[in-house]
Image (cartoon, rainbow over all chains, first blue to last red; front, side, top):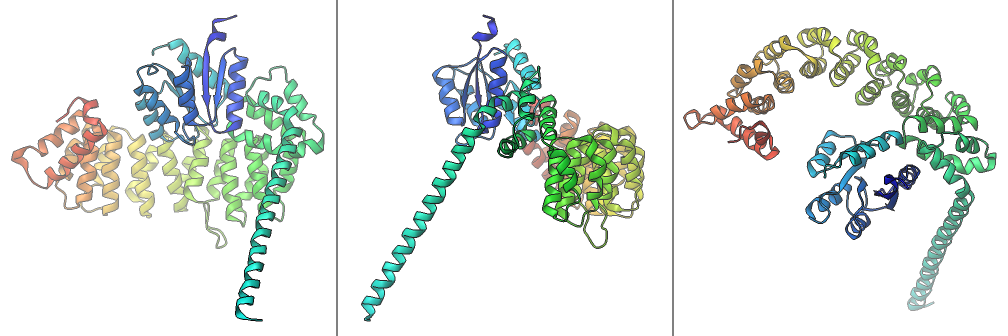
Length: 129
Length: 366
């Protein structure tokens, strides 16, 4: 069992295709995954049992990825969680808002799954939170 | 029949109609749910292979091969799922999904449909070819830039941008022209498509800046700025100085703000003179802020007292964007001894900058 298999990552996206492929990719790489389809469930999952990293879509029903990220940063118990934002919106303002709110990194759809994995590994290796 | 009986009958008929409508809706929803469930059940065995290909986890090619080999009656149901994945991924997964589409003859079918008599069919074909990013399709798609249907032209331009083959740049620019009374491609669609094609569109872009059509010159100027095509700067200077079209001059000014050098600060400053039109003066003042060079400090400070108050506000905002030196000029303008029109514009810009956090970043807070 490698160190990677112990690492749990939460993936939140209301697009079933994206959710399935990201979870599949992470699972193949040896990570444990938790998959949810909305922001409220994502926040509940993070608060109940914090993962090492959360990959959050920005545009989700209920709470947006930015809202979830903001609540994570406001909660001292989970404020050090690494978060990668995933979104179809490529506007500079979204990138700025994401980083200003405390995102660890940002991936814009359409994305290369390989690139996403690179970002995941980089954020986990950085471990600056 | 009495009036009461007539109302009663009408009420019964209305009630029956309502019940029937509800029954039809419930039946339709149940049927759709059942069809959906049956379809999901049929496709379930193929979902893992589809996800494996889309996630790039098909190094041995088995998943792609299995999807390419599904029978035609299954492919009809599976195709929408593959098409749904295509715009969501890039790189090898997108190429592999495209290969699956090609294996089932969808690419060839789309190429045939490019000359369909139906505009919807032509647009769908162009959209699909864009999704599969097939560079070999470009030549056959280019004639659609002159299609009678505006929707077909727009879908084709976007598809060519998605494919990203720079050889299509001149064709997309050609679509901007108004031909035979048909309004050309919207400028923003052409600009986005060109930007998606990358740095290799340089020669087509430079040629477009010399086009006789102002719509083409305008889009090329916009793309030159946003795409940071520094080689376009000399031509942009000429367009700003003397183009017959005011939109082209404005776009050239904006682009120079993005790609211009030290000399262009003076060029843009000249076009803020009172002899120029208000629109161009304001555009040049904003472009000086985008450029962010300290050579523009005097020009922008001078504009704070201009009679065109909007121009003064834009000049103040540009001073903020230049950084600490520009902010110092604004703080000088709002000093108690300098109360006047300049102080109004400067004060507003400083307040906005404080709200945006720009003063803290620059280290020159009030």
